[in-house]
Image (cartoon, rainbow over all chains, first blue to last red; front, top):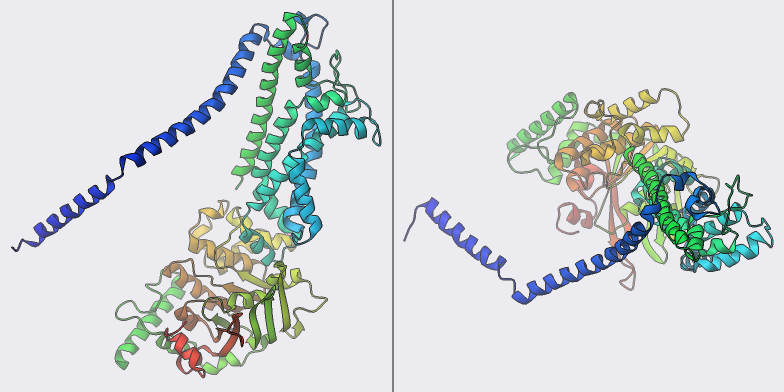
Length: 309
Length: 319
């Protein structure tokens, strides 16, 4: 049988299409249900994580909301729980964290630059440093507290129970995290950028300063944000290095006594009166607000930098 | 046959010439002829030689790099062994050969980029205008200021087009008239007209061919003496390739160019001198390393090679 050309083509296309459709729908039923089951498992894990967090937050909000108000941000600690605010603790936290940022960013980024750009990985001491940085990131925070008490509050540094002691202790705690995050960010800059810069007669330092660092700022900033968020929430090491449980004054500098939000909240929760429990719950809301504000600022800063190129 | 070849040649010449006048209209194809069979490399080499005129002119230049007994190894693995030849000034010198024969290793010796690989060790001598390039007092940073490099993959910096060009001059401390430097570099790389209205846009928004021309402009901006190109067109389409080839022929007036290429037609079209490297094995049939097989005027290498291996390679029968 001879069909006209166009008809033959149409027949052939139809045949091919039917075969393709057959091949595409031939997936076995077991394969599909397994894929659904896996999908469901993934959904379950994420919902469990979110649910746990949500319950904690909702609980804190229900308990603390009656007491929540602007006066929590403007009033200092008072002997009466109904009149107490968190101003002293907020300022203490801001000072301590300010100190942490000033210390960890240059040290952490510097160490990361050394490890990524300058260190010869065949040398045993560079490998030892690398291994130790990773291990230090996993050391429990209370250990840093004891270290701070022994070497910073007393001992060689002997600064006493002041803001600076808290800043240094928390800096030691988050420094490994900052170094690891900064290294990741620096490593993510393609080596073609380094080669391009060096091939133009740039020195190694010029290449780091003008190409590698600007390109890795968003990644470094993300790491710093995470590390700082962790530092804000730390309680245990600060209890050891002098964050007082009852402070009714604002810290005036790095050599003043202080308290921080998580320590204050911890103290209130351990008191007997119901008013203090409510106040502590309200304190959690205050701390969340502070955390969100600081992180938003950091993220805004990062995005602004990203848009520059 | 002769008549046809003649006609194709004329076409190619016209196409190329109008290209130069028009400042970079797209070439029809990589081979030079718009219709009919593509010319063989031999035809391309002869044709390009005819356009350049006196074939011996390429060899009457001063020596730029004198390479003597050069061997490079990565750790214990040899990459090239005992390579000796002279690269001449204001020429385009092509390095050709199969993959793994050490062309890229060789070209990276000329601006000491191999220094950046800790395991690489270089033996033998390279002198640059008579100075030992690997002498103890030589600063590799100073070397790279005079000997620029363009890489296989376009690698613009994640910055604006302007800042990409200005980066080199700025780190070298050229402060005056940065706008003029940027404009001159982009004009020389035949890119100015395409980008003059968007100098502050990110260079990543350009096409691959434009990015590669930006990289050429970037290396031209610091007024080097030599430009090394490591397969600069391997990631580009034929039109962009044609523009970069035209650009190289223009740049050769002021600079010496060394180019690594896998594309025989490209080597035949643009280069004055060609070095052919090939992988060789040692006595135990192990440790492949690159050796120089032949180095001569391009037209000779492609039409009358003195070594049989060269002939087999350039005609596409081995490699």
